[in-house]
Structure formats: structure tokens, C-alpha cells
Image 1 (cartoon, rainbow, N blue to C red):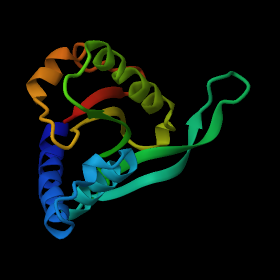
Image 2 (cartoon, rainbow, N blue to C red):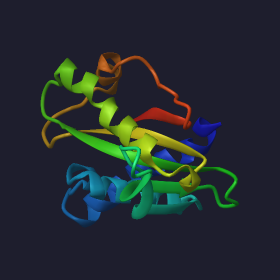
Image 3 (cartoon, rainbow, N blue to C red):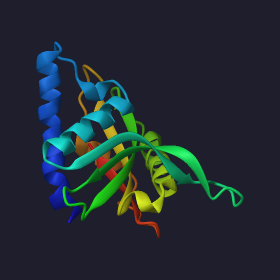
Length: 167
């Protein structure tokens, strides 16, 4: 079901990148940083009628027993217009210059997944750790090569957290 709902959303991202490039002498918002990239993802969601909130304050699960919740920040929340489905994303961006070391890719999902598991369960129906791979200016990024180097598939947990790989 997620693929059906996410497909139109993620298909808007290239259009937004082109608009930035046309308006700002070739500037690509995905080459700036994670915050700018999350803003593009939120903008793409709103363009298809979804609700989106980027970089918002929220309660997160604490790491110790004495502090069950702590104040924190979530990267991205998206909901369908009627609110029947909602997702929160903890995004980690990897800027790729030339070749990508396998160790880098093997370690990449862990922080995003860990952060997604800490998101308050009431914030969304599902929580995802998302990896956003962007090629540095002048470099090419082959998504097939990147996906082949990533550890195997999504890893669901009891809190409905999955690793999602946005590329």
C-alpha cells in the first residue's frame, strides 16, 4: 500500500529539483544538506494534496528507564488528505563523491532506524528511517550499485519501524 501512496509523492521530487535548477542557475536543493532535502520532500507531498510537516518538535523515547520521553525533533511527517495513513521519517543524507565504500553503506541504515524507533508512537501510523543518497556535483550515482551494497531489505520492529531507502 505504501508504494501506491508514495509513488505520486516521490515522482514530484524531480520536478521540484528542475524548478530550482531553472530558477537558481542550476542549483540543486538536494545537494545542500538534510534539512533542505527534507523540505523538498515535504514540498513534493503538499503538491499532491498530502499534509506535510518538516523539522518539527516532538516527544521521543528516552534511552534510559528513568526518562521514558524527552523533547526531540522529527525530520518529516506526512499524512494522506483524510488522515487515514500517516508516516514519520527520520532522514539521513549521504552525499556521494565518487565511489561509495561498502562500510559506509553497511553502517548507514542504523542511525536512521534507531532515530525512527525513538519517535513517539502517536505521531504517525508508521515510522521509517530513510536514507537519501545524493551525488555530489560532477559525480554520477548509480542507484543499482548503491542498492546492491546496502544490507538486506527492510527490518520491521515491534514499533512498526522500517528502513526505507529513498534514492
